[in-house]
Image (tube, rainbow, N blue to C red; front, side, top):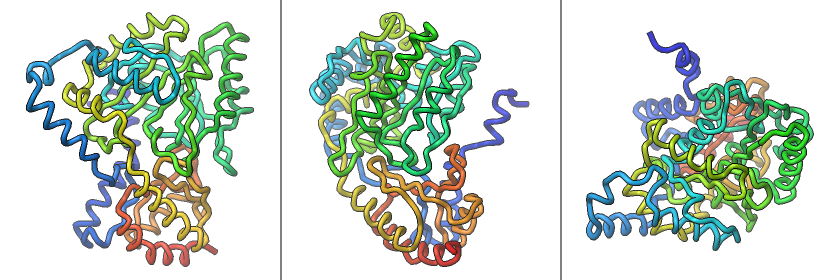
Length: 395
């Protein structure tokens, strides 16, 4: 018999992954060209050529005992130094290698943070809609995830409700901008207001409240919109980053956590997070790809492809009568279901071999997430099916 802790996770296995598997089954039946799978945020743009060249050069020229071996649990010193300098150059910060901990993607970064800061029954807040795995990450370290309800007009953070829900047991707030699933980017003004609320509540309760900025989509911002670097506005901020989207490396599991020196008790926290990297079983981030990303820090993602997909799908769905805000970043549309039960809407879409994810998976029922990180050709082929779906469901 499995552990009680796992029973609920097994019963509520990720809908996103289930839809992805469903897509593979439908492709076997109808042919891949006749299935329109918008379920998974798996980059459709290949990794930049520099990634391949970096791998070849490293493997051919560097000591294999180094590039395939253990290192400090925080990661290679030269890699962390290069990342800190790159961040400083881009955002005007003042980090050193000591502020960087290399991780097995952003997911591992979030886990080592919660492993290091959470005591039993302490609370972590986040804004709906949010990435479903936050539940597991927080509850896995005996914390309690509390949800701030969404603003369904703009999907901007509900700051009044945030302030009302902070208690003496509040330990952290997770933000995700650009946001999965809405594509909303929080403005500098919004970040400043969040920081003001957290400072106020820290002083009121004499506690330390962390801001955890989950940033795998940082570089995927359109129309010249800038994503604020949050450590500049609130000192008790962790930044969690992944190269999965910017370099199209989701399967390589490589990222990092930033812990500013200005953070209260930063030395102990850095030590705790480094130890957590080991004791949760990651030990260290993948050694070869630490070296690879060090050589690719200044490569910009292929925004042109994603932007083309964004505009094409958004404009066409709007013309069919679907309701959706235009995403500012990431590669998702969050579309209002034309029927009340969005899961029923997802099932109707399957009749047309269209797959997307119900909004209840993101604590926001009544909506669906459509990932446009797919080929532009697939989007074009799917449009007649979306039109039929609209004709059947929009009244």
